[in-house]
Length: 216
Image (tube, rainbow, N blue to C red; front, side, top):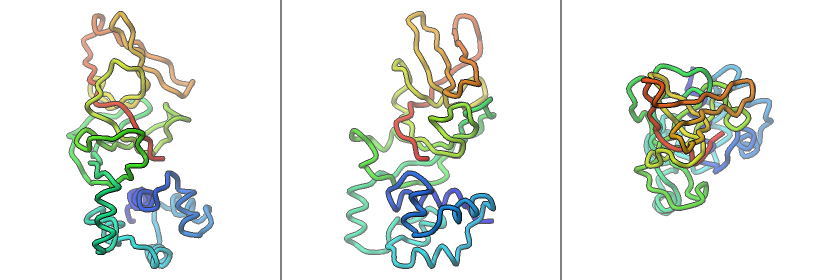
């Protein structure tokens, strides 16, 4: 089994697109082929390498995430350095459901993302990528998608955040109230809104960062 999801995430970055369907268009294959690969959680690498043989993608980077996105061409490298941001992809997965137990957070990869995805200039040191698990934030955030969070933004402004609630990492919409309580909201209406009041509970809540970009 190869790392299907990571490979396709890197293909999205290389082609500067935000969906598997658009990757299929760039590879000039039927989207059903990609869905078959997804169901099997495996890509036939000989087929994939044949499809990208005319691209400037670095095969080592595609398969492992290591090295430059492009083949060793100085002009391409300069363009990449200028037009992309390298962001740490964290090993934790943030639940958009009932939560998962937190474990040691460490960067397991670096992904290069086009600066054009961001509305304003960003400090790469403040950006982290985490994966969504669960359906409580659908249709806004899909199970298996990735988000970029800004760890310098710790609350005060309503929005979608990654947070640590007790021993669970979650991604939820937070609404900050004047009485210092926080509404923890799921975009999926089948999940109930929770009200967090630090005066009424000893359960710790720590905001990890605010979502600023979604990579579906």
